Image 1 (cartoon, one colour):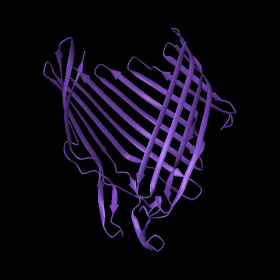
Image 2: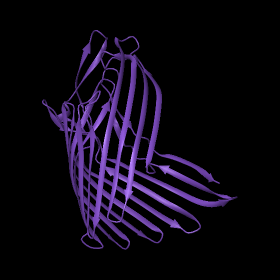
Image 3: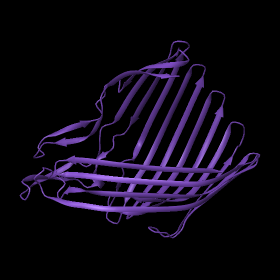
Image 4: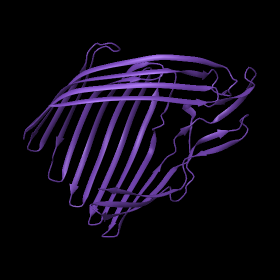
Length: 353
């Protein structure tokens, strides 16, 4: 038996120009769970209560391009609460080369939302000692609370995964499809992921590749989301020099995210400012390619009854100017690149005793 309790409280303030914001948030979570593990099967069951409260107030600009303190604003004050009680059951059965798992989660008709059922099924076939195939599918729900609305999202997941593991090598490849409904917007995602790992003696290497096709669709338009990438590559290397140090490197390489370019401007007499007009999301362009190389060197040394870990790290070692977006002057006649962090070097130590 297991009993979990959580309480989280935060009070945040933000001010910029004519925008002021105070957000007080409370979250209470409680669950009672039962677990049973046997050689051929396992069972998990429980009940969950999740309570979320958000109080938001402040002033917001009426025009998002006019944010001086003297520009017009509208006052905002709202209180939102979400109650999410659920009961769940998960069963897993293993027999020879087969493993089958299935679960369900029930939310009653209560307070903010009507009743819903979430469920999942996964099947693993161990073809041999080195090869395995995994199939999974599920339907899921989630309660959401933002500054204006309380709403539930619904998503369907389908995936097939192949696994290979032998001696120093481990390979996985997967195809998946996910379809999420967010209020009046549908987000279909299709993806391919490849992963390879090699570990021998003092060397540990991992390489992953992902292709993600993610769209946002509503009654008016269809356009890519911020997580739509033709390629996303991540390489990790770790090498240990016995009794000296450990060297690690992480390299990221992906397409730039989408941004809406400026197509025109007009003068707004009420606020005495220039109003930008951007292209539609369906005609958005990509930012330049994103690349990042981080390197870290660490060493563990005995110190008294404990140990001391000293490290030297450098983020964005090559000092690549990765573009986050674009900024403009007051009348939008000049455009400048807004960059992610450039090279940062830091060092330190952790003493455990």
